[in-house]
Amino acid sequence: MAFSPQFLDELRLRTGLADLIGKRVRLTHKGNEHQGLCPFHKEKTPSFTLNEEKGFYHCFGCGAHGSAIDFVMNMDGLSFPEAVERLAGDAGMEVPVDSPEERENAKKRQTLYDVVEAAAAYFEQQLRMPEGRTALDYLKGRGLDDGTIAKFRLGFAPDGHGALKTALRRLKISDDQMVAAGLLIQPEDAGREAYDRFRNRVIFPITDKRGRVIAFGGRIMAGDDDKKLAKYLNSPETALFHKGNVLYNLALAAKSARQQGTVIVTEGYMDDIALAQAGFEHAVAPLGTALTEQQIVELWKLVREPVMCFDGDNAGMRAQGRAAERALALLKPGYALRFATLPQGEDPDSLIANQGRQAMANLIEKAEPLSEVLWKIETGGRLPKTPEQRAALQKALEDHARSITDPTVRAHFSKDFRDRVWAASGRSEKAGKRVKTMAPTMGIGAGAATGAKIDAHALRERILLATVLGHPGLYDTVGERLGGVSFSAPGLDNLRQEVLKTLAGEPDLDSEGVKRHLKENGYSEILDFVLMPEVIANAFFVKPGTDIETALEGWEETYALYRNTDLGIEIEEERDRLKDDMSSENFNRFNSLSEQKLEAAKGIEDEQAGRTKN
Image (cartoon, rainbow, N blue to C red; front, side, top):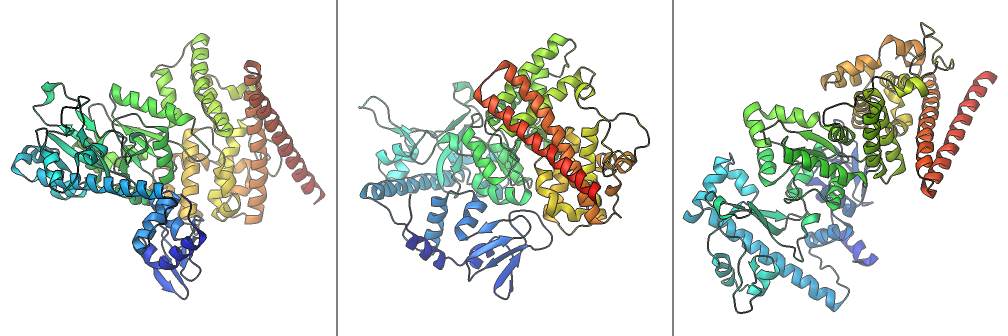
């Protein structure tokens, strides 16, 4: 839908930016501006400002910037037209419709919203009626309190073929409208009347991103299990509801997800509701099917690394595998899925009841990356013992990597899988390809206590991190590049991500403050590994007392050497691919990597030449 510039200008004028944002953020008025804690990332010192006169907001911490429309889009995960429609409704403005046909369609959609909302109110009411007592007892038996039942608008569909139909007819709603809304089933036999779709079921309203009811899920009651009915039944596809595009509880979970920096994806309605009651309000769920590509995209609009939380039984493991496979083609730098597997026999509700809320928090915190899930699926917990087994494993993993569209992410997955296969053999591929004596430049290797060969690539990863830990002020200059790499060891890469997240949220922290934060959050062991004496011995500029200019110069050179080696590894892997598949895509990728390596090597030579002259 296109909106005229005049309409959008009028909408911005009528929308008070401070009033809009002030509903979500506690603001302090200072001169022409308002300040507050940024709603888009965690911080302790306010870096979020808005200027009512100029009509924009800006965060100096994470770079979030935009107008009232941008704010609603980013906070609530809405598209541009959806955000405009919401703001126009709040401002009492009528959204212009381009043609009579569009006006008619808009009117029909609004009628469907009204019909479905009327049904939701009816189901809620029935839960409190004598006939709904069994359904209410079921919900209470699952540990839900009255506040949670009301918050999620849970209800009950009475038994019988015409209870809902009769109630809505009294509201002047026609059978055709109820059929269009998915509430009635119209038999193919023209002589038979339409009848209620949901009968004798607990009802879970399903909403869109704006919180409007668009469909329902229904669970059978105890005693109906022997009738061979589906345990859960969803509304059919309608003009409002497309199951593969919708996530249960997204409207309620969005704000908390952004504040927490993550969103939990569970297997169903009750898991979400139980988590919300326990304080994990950032949980959503697909609607009884495997996670779709569109649902993954919706999750990434909220956060960059959603956490899949599935049961540890066979069905849960299959769901993990399907989600992992579905995500591969969509992966891009900085966007991923992580996986938290519940213990056997536990669901979120029982885990919290048996072990406490902290057990669930720990499970989410320790969620594994997608690559680890694929590794476990292919190995089945048993490492390969023969060359033939390793070859089969490597081929299966490479097939997964080839499913990734983004070339950079694909190269890193391929590297990760190759490293794992070699490590599983009790050897290291680095022993043959990557181990070399550190270059005696800028103190990298010059201070080594022995002449023994070490893994230069892995040591440089530690040096890059240790330098930033000793000089947090480097973050503004090197943070983007440090965020664009992926370290070979999962533990070290997790530390890299945590350091970047910490400095993005609290840029004023000094070296000791950063280290203290890391230790408090469970990174003590890997932190000690990064700061071992051998690191300082190979890079004197790592020491906190070194002036920041020298530290930056050392970091830049280390990064150039690291990137040059990284590119060399990727080139070798791409050369192997070319042997198997001489496609234009692989050939272009090989040439691009080769050119990048030449440029990186030239940068190192120029840097060394510059120091020689000085």
